[in-house]
Image (cartoon, rainbow, N blue to C red; front, side):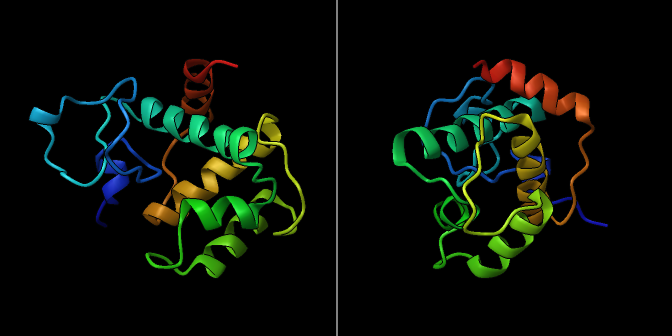
Length: 137
């Protein structure tokens, strides 16, 4: 079985290069010129948490449909299938408002995005706890 690019890069959300995230491998040492590479998966998941919180706080994206439409735009993804799988995993309707500051929403959301992006979700709950701690409140 091959490991997804996001797992190999410790970037399970497949976040594109651009922002200067905590835990990034220096650009001079990166082997992936398109996507961030982190020193540990906790840093990649931390970045996911911050982005998802910003989607809600700064951009008013309140539903899985709105969140995933921005995370995985249709020009690169089968966004309707992505929305459906994430909503099902989180246990909400695609157009039902969710609160990403609630760990009961955030952890299943993260797990679903990681699974969709990589074909698997290999991380234990402890990794999500550490990532959440790194992300702060």
